[in-house]
Length: 161
Image 1: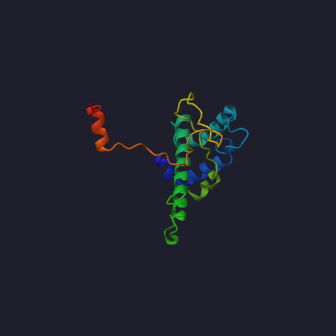
Image 2: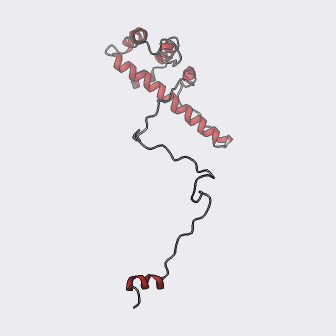
C-alpha cells in the first residue's frame, strides 16, 4: 500500500474516482447499504488499482479505502483538538498531501450504537421520595447512635448485679 500512497498521480485519480462513487463513503446515500451496488462500485475501482498492482483484490482494496478514511479522520481530529486548545499559533497542519482532496469524507462517520454491558434484569431506580412517605428524606441528616467506650464496656461486661 505504501507504493500507492507515494504515487501522487495514481492517488489523485483514485481519490477523485472514490468521490464519484458516493455509495462507498456517503452514509446517507440510499445505496450505501446495498451490497450489490457497493460491489459494482468496488469492481469499478478495482480495475484502476489492478493497473498499478495486478495482484490486488477486493480485500486489499477495502484496506486501502479504510486506511485513507481513518487517516483522514485522525488528521481532522488533530486539527479540531488544536483549535479547541486556544493556542492560535499552534494550529495543527496536516502533513498528508492528499488531505484537502479527502474533505468530501468530512461528516461521514457514523458512531456505532453502544451496547450496554449491564444485565437487563436490573431493578428500576427507586422513585423519588415524596412528603407523604414516612421516614427521613434524602436531605435530612439522620443521627447515628454513637457508642462511647464506657457504654461499650458495660454492654460487654453484662448488667451489674
